[in-house]
Every structure is written in structure tokens, then in C-alpha cells.
Image (cartoon, rainbow, N blue to C red; front, side, top):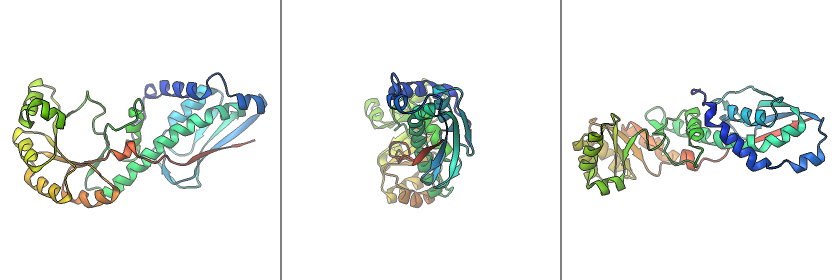
Length: 279
């Protein structure tokens, strides 16, 4: 299990999500559910999943009603099989109904990412590190990258501020790979310098320029093999571009250090979770 998220990463998001959904009040619940009615809601995995978002869900329930009692029997990062219940929330039935959708939305989204990350990690078979990318839903990056860690994957850079990645547009504007690497080195960040390459000539130039990490972006499998041989251990190698599970199974054995997969965060299918209230 990764280190828990700092609540500051999700408290404002939970407030905004509840405001968006509840607005001035749940008019259906107010009309149909007696104010004194009590209930117990059970969270159930309808598809097998890697659980993620327990603390966020707790925050949702507590924000709606601090008297709700929320108990999880599984932790973030745990595998939960289809048909298994993993949490129960007890208290005012109206509060359960108000919180239900927001709590589910967060958990389904995050568990979907964690489950997808786990699938890629398993496909890699321990031969290569699976990385995420910055292809995340705006404002939800901290949560999405936490979900990747829950699934056993690793984070690339969190944003533009904590890692150097010289991409094609940087290369074009700087006048070439060598010039771009030299300018980053002169800036004195003290961070590893990664260069995105798109052909073997760029790989050679990145190696000669002293790049620490070389990304092979959208190379064919055969060209990736040739590029890794050319690098010859003088830099770390990251594979990227159109990384399906089937392709990762093949490429993991080539000898690269990592494979970055945008689909983990931008195309993960939401996990199927239900919330059934008992009275």
C-alpha cells in the first residue's frame, strides 16, 4: 500500500463535488425519506478491482454528516473480487443517500485507474517499471497518480515543475537536442535530464549530449530493440507510445528501464461499485 494521500489533496475537491451534486439540497430524498430514518449502506464490488479512494469516500460521508459511521474491511491497494463487500456506512438514511453518488464517483474513478495500473504491472512481469504520464483529468492529478501507485505502478513527473522532459517542441525551439540538453544543464536544476526521441539519429544525439534518460516515442518494436542496443547502458531507456497490455508483455523483455502508459489514467474504465442501503 502506498503512503496515504494528504487530506489537503482531496478535501477541496470533495467540497466542490458535493456542491455540484447537492446544490441547495436533495429534493427527492427530502420528500420521500423521513428525517429520523436510519440505515446501513454496503459498498459492493460488482467487478473485480484494486480498491482505491477509501479515504476520499470517508471524507465525502463525513462532510455530508459527521455522525455517519464508516468502516472499511479492505484498504487502498487491496484486490477485491466481484461480489465482495468491502465497506459499510451507518447512520441517517437521508445522509447516506445524499453522499452516495459523490462517494461512488470518486471510488469508481480511482479504483478503475488502480485496476488498470495493476494489469499493466502484471503484464510487465517485473522486468520493467510501469510509469504513468501527465494525461490526467485536470484538477484530479494527485488522486489519479495516487491510484496508479495503489495499482503498483510508478509516477513519472507530477507536473512541469518537478522533472525535466525535453520533448519535440522543445527540441525544435531550442535548435536541436544537444542545444536543449546543454541549456537545461546550464540552468542548474540538478535533476535527471530526459529527452524524447523519435528516430535512431535522435537517440544517438541524445546519448552524445549526455541525456540521463532517453524516451523512445512511438518506435516500432524492432527499432526499439536497435535503439536499446545503441544506448548500451549509457542512459536509462523509457519506452512510450501505443502501449497496450499485449505490447507491454512483448516489450518488457527488451531490456528497457521503464514503459510509460498514458492509457492508465486517460482511458481506464471505471470500476463497478454499488451502494445498497439496508433499513
